[in-house]
Length: 196
Image (cartoon, rainbow, N blue to C red; front, side):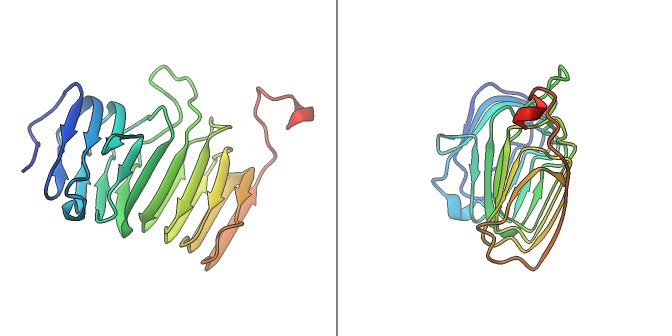
């Protein structure tokens, strides 16, 4: 079963025994992805979704939790106002390429992301966030540039490139193969230099 003709909706609850496809969905209220058949959910395609109030897994807020999913497409989602957690099968494809830390009004949002499973995670352009957190586990290739929030790298992360980071933790990174860190001075304009 697919929902590929659905372009806009209020709150939406989906319990699908198979891949979840709503690839024409552009705007939505709260989207609750039920995990009743989680082992059968091998992909999630909401590639045109650009505005959503909240994404849930089985009612758990701000979460996409499908450890059998080999492909998650959220390529048009430009801003998500709360910290988002995404869990996929190890080695999965994840598209969050449009996700930014500026909302439609051009106001900075302190972006937070917890991600586990995808083969490649690339974050760039989140250069207005200062107090968010990115946490990564089970990611083969993690690339982050310009992000000044906290970066926590955990188990299963193999290759890390961070450019322009100010707060990077490798304390739980037990599986690293390569690390390339380029840091900068903390420069949040809202914090006095003596407190930075």
